[in-house]
Length: 275
Ligand SMILES: C[S@@+](CC[C@H](N)C(=O)[O-])C[C@H]1O[C@@H](n2cnc3c(N)ncnc32)[C@H](O)[C@@H]1O
Image (cartoon, rainbow, N blue to C red; front, side, top):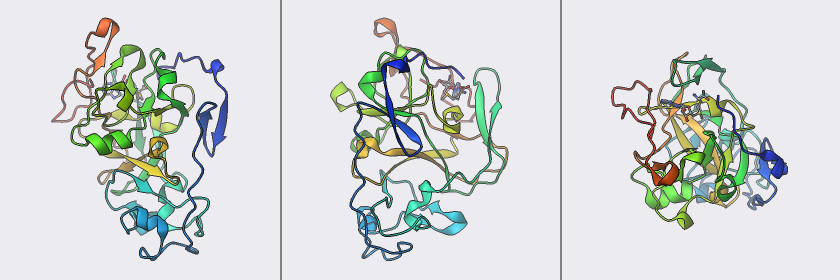
């Protein structure tokens, strides 16, 4: 694992549950919440279900599965009347599968696999790190553990999982951004370079078995949580992967020169390049 050379001593942090927030980031207050009791069951009366298109995004089967990927999922939060077993809090439950960090083939470095079978739609893990303003990590060196929170951009641009151009000193992993102007770029990112969890070891694949889902229990999509869900049946010991979402030729090196990086995912449809 490459370590971040980012100088964290310049920043102080506060904690929001299990992840850290840089001092200059104001984390949004939780939304007012629904008036349900126990578990939310009636999508007609639950105000959180209304935000999800008058539906619950999850079903309880197998301890909770996301029915389909959405631009954003609004989960119940601290101000809701329902409890921790509510169907609309699936990603807030603790890690269910035994995940192992293993050393893979040369080139790809560390990788993650599950010891358990994982059904499609099941939450696997959250991408945890330090929540930063993107502009504050621009000068990071060799930090390949930064995830743009780009659900807003994805919603606007959808279609291609294209990345904005970046200086090579800050290689960004994460999904979809179809943007040219910096002003449209994601305002916030999660930096797992110096602190994080198992998600930072998950590799890219051109045929991934996980997908990225943005989740909020407040109303600010720019600060959504990033959670990885199973895209298909995942057998025990299969490597976990998601699409990093780089558009080819979108990462720039010194002097604006296009930087390339080989992809070793080994999928039949592999593009042979990470970016
Ligand atoms: C967040 S890290 C993933 C964990 C990483 N394998 C490690 O050992 O730390 C992202 C980096 O892993 C490497 N990587 C991930 N997927 C890859 C792939 N399919 N082909 C080549 N390198 C990959 C790249 O160096 C990338 O910048």
